[in-house]
Image (cartoon, rainbow, N blue to C red; front, side, top):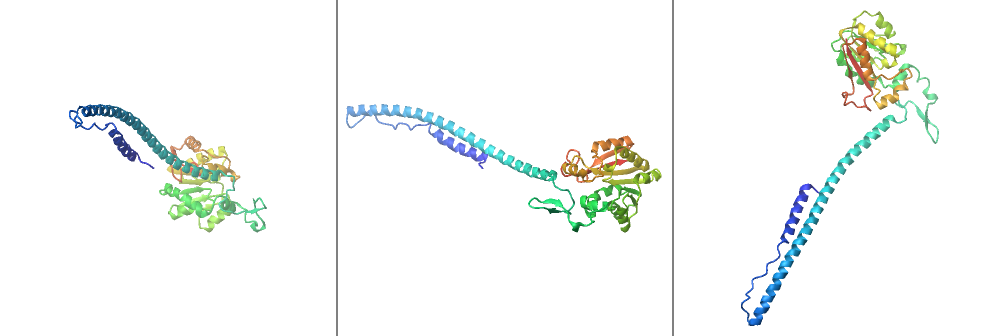
Length: 339
């Protein structure tokens, strides 16, 4: 691509050449008073000198007109070349931006595409020529139970633990944490590794047994019953991940109030849920048939305020603030409320 400084140098060079045309050659000096041919020669010499002076005068005017015309053409050419160079630079910029948008569109299209959402491929394809999803006898009864459901649709315990690790710093000063909906015990293990005392509750006996096999303190009881029977201000931290979207509206309001009542002053509630502003997360929200409805961050903040929490904020575990969050990639958010 031609650079602007190069165009300027070329234009100056051409203009210098054009400027030289402004000056027609002068008539060479002639001795008009003598001639070896006598007076006839002197007359001829004076006539020739007069003709040459007329020619020089008109040639100079022609040169000036031509120089002006060529100068205008050169200036137009330079302007057009500069405009073309600028346009090409803009095209390159737009092309790069367009490529970025194309890649982004492909990512979004893949996220919202009508395809099965599973942590791994548990089902094969059946049929020819059009393959459809299905399973055969080899799958057996391995697809039964909530534990298997979580493995299939949420991800492995290792995967979830790695995603929940970011919440541990909220509880480093706690001495009695309650994990509501402990599931397979991923967060309880993280707290144990950090030396933070904790107890978990869950309704699924298979999941509770799995936690106990790992040496985790888990009770197979209803979270509302357990909280109601606990002494006020008995916990300094409460954690629940992917739980509150299972509650009806009235139960969610009750839960937030009950947790605040059981938290000590300065205690913290971290409640993670599906981010309805994420295209992919909203698409897969109803994969879990026990989900009630998505909860928008501003709604959850309002409910925390109504429940009496002095302060609360939205936290995106995958990074980003309110204005910078990745709508397509941040599948969950948490509200961090302080008693």
